[in-house]
Image (tube, rainbow, N blue to C red):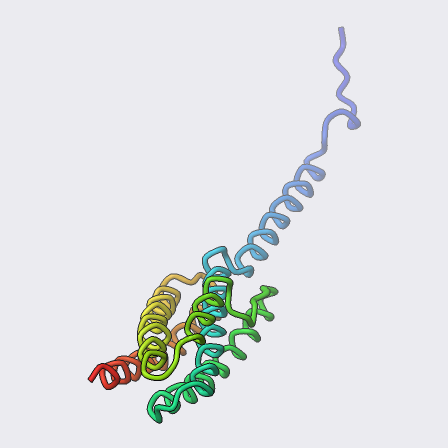
Length: 183
């Protein structure tokens, strides 16, 4: 009995080499695409940062119109200006990474802003300073600190690192405002 060894049944060395090269290059291309796309942590950071920023802006606009305290108004003005600048930069960064972020506060923060907007006078000022000034900035400083260390995308990591000092300064300002209002 004779075994047939025609070239149609046994792949040539050349076709095996071409197939291996194509498979290798395909794997490299897929790996580079995966490396270029931000991971789940980075996407979550951008989403949370956008929510925090839009909450800060919306609540501070309420403070601009409701408060009669000059220090509260000054703090609110600074927060609207500075967080709007960061929000614009964040939107541009997210867009460059094909990630959609909202420019509106999330449902939980909308409830918080609604509750805040129903307060008046010193009660409003104290709650704004405590919840939007101190608590919200404490949370966002932690968010940006973590992202400056853990983000896998270098642009997102750089964005977090670049904006962290200003957010830390906002927290210091909020603590001083809260302390002044507590007297």
